[in-house]
Image 1 (cartoon, rainbow, N blue to C red):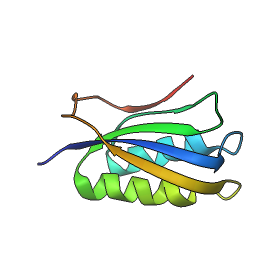
Image 2 (image 1 turned 30 degrees about the vertical axis):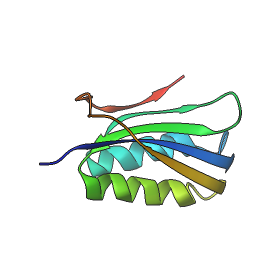
Image 3 (image 1 turned 90 degrees about the horizontal axis):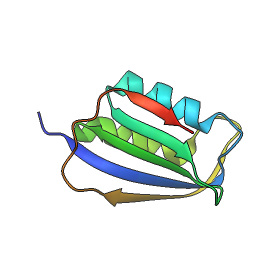
Image 4 (image 1 turned 90 degrees about the vertical axis):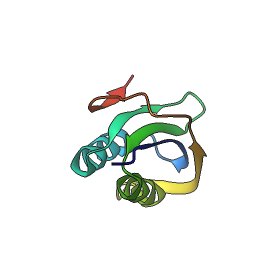
Length: 92
C-alpha cells in the first residue's frame, strides 16, 4: 500500500470551533496517522500520513471543516517520505 505525507494549513475562522477535534475524528475514521495543532497566527496545521484517497478525503474535509468554522483558504504541501507515524493526535 502506498503511503503519502501532506502538511495542510487552514486559514479562516478555524480556532475555537472544534476544528482540531473534528480533524482528529475524521483522520482516525480514515485510518490516517499524524497530528493537528493551532498556530499562533490563527491558522490550523495538519500533518497527515496515509493512503492517497484517505488523505484526499481529509483535505476535502479541511476545506469545509466543522459547522461553526469559516474556512477561507487551504494550502497543501507535499512532504518528503512518511515517517511511519502511529495514531492521530491533537498537539497543544
